[in-house]
Length: 366
Ligand code: NAI
Ligand code: MG
Image (cartoon, rainbow, N blue to C red; front, side, top):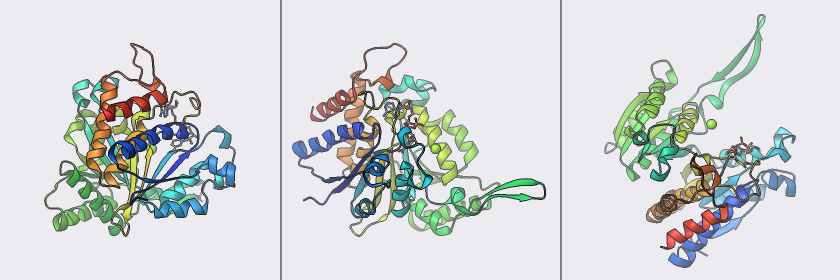
């Protein structure tokens, strides 16, 4: 037993394949560094449906609430496309996010120098890029009431409501300021206070929390549409970007693509602190189950491995170890190790999922 508990949910498709490589990293930290984790593993998504008829059992949900961190692979795939909505694999993921109340979604956009030419932007615009987008995940226009489609007179009307309470804005803002203190002490908050009342409240509450609790952090505000332009024009001006659910959905996808492949992108979703001070947390790659390459040894395990690095940093206070793991990834890329998704136009021979995992562990050890 250690005081670091981790629940691994490999899920479907390439989920188990990339998670096997994370296991190698976890084992290395244990055997080489004496940093051990109390790891349990369970089913989610289609795999859970096949075994239990539901995409997430109550027992797995209860376990997820108890552990320090959940690490999830991916869910879904063509075998489950025709299932009833209530038992679709994605429902397992949504239940985890909702019941753990994971309100702060962290999406880094980091440019590894060896992959800078992969970007659709010029090398000098993205080289060295390291920003973090914090997207509020549990409120806003995706959840606000009233919503729906109804008929008025002789035409249909579709309605969604952007709704934020002070409390929801305040907790997201605190997460962003805390994050900034661990990074470069700089937050840019994005909304559209020029045209939306929810944006005016967002800006006011962020300013209030800043003045009362985080005066040491540099704060700026930007309209989200300008933010989109700036992200593509000069992304290195940012460090932490704080934004709502809708703008965050779009801005984080935009920022992610500044740096290249889906197979490289990690994420974290954090909630309120637990009794031991650690936040409720789930870590997962941004990509899905990639049915087109499942079972072929082609999946890039880096997104999942970098998600574990985020767990080291944000759940276990092992920032140096997280950096060491990120450097190992950077190192193997600099050595030229490439899975198939990272092959450039100049070609070459890709390595397998398992060879990439082995290379990263070897680099950790070197
Ligand atoms: P996807 O992310 O699974 O795949 C998109 C493309 O990127 C595919 O060509 C795939 O081969 C490639 N790709 C993804 N991850 C990769 C990796 N690690 N290494 C190399 N190549 C990689 O998205 P898609 O195809 O839209 O969805 C497939 C299934 O995954 C669907 O059932 C979808 O519902 C589910 N999905 C699940 C998510 C999750 O579990 N969080 C997120 C997105 C989709
Ligand atoms: Mg999206």
